[in-house]
Length: 158
Image 1: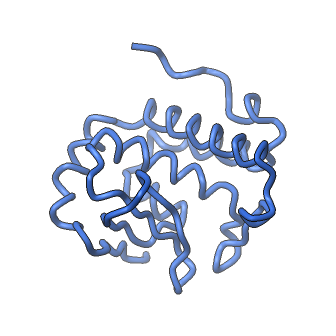
Image 2: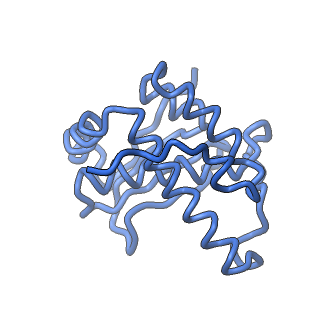
């Protein structure tokens, strides 16, 4: 089993201005419960629906993020996808409501930048899963799957 990289995201992705914020979040993760982490990144709901891909991130009418997961994912795919999609929240300015994108729209982004952001989100997921209890995340995904299948699980605002 490979160990998680020790290099910071900011060092690995110096061209992405949001990488230092992701590193700060990762430093705080061990002191936070999962629900606190989701709220900190303005995730307002989670849904499990048929999709062509493992997961996705969108913005709801209230300005919070909606995380969507494929209804045929394994618990391990859900855990990895949760980390990946949390990584995508870092290329938004969360001080704005709705969150303001820090990158050009997808149709205007270069293939190189698109690939770099996806690599960042994969690296974030790996670093995040190294700091949380991945087995617990997988168990929670497995336990909650039937409860959220084909509908959203709305997280209450504090």
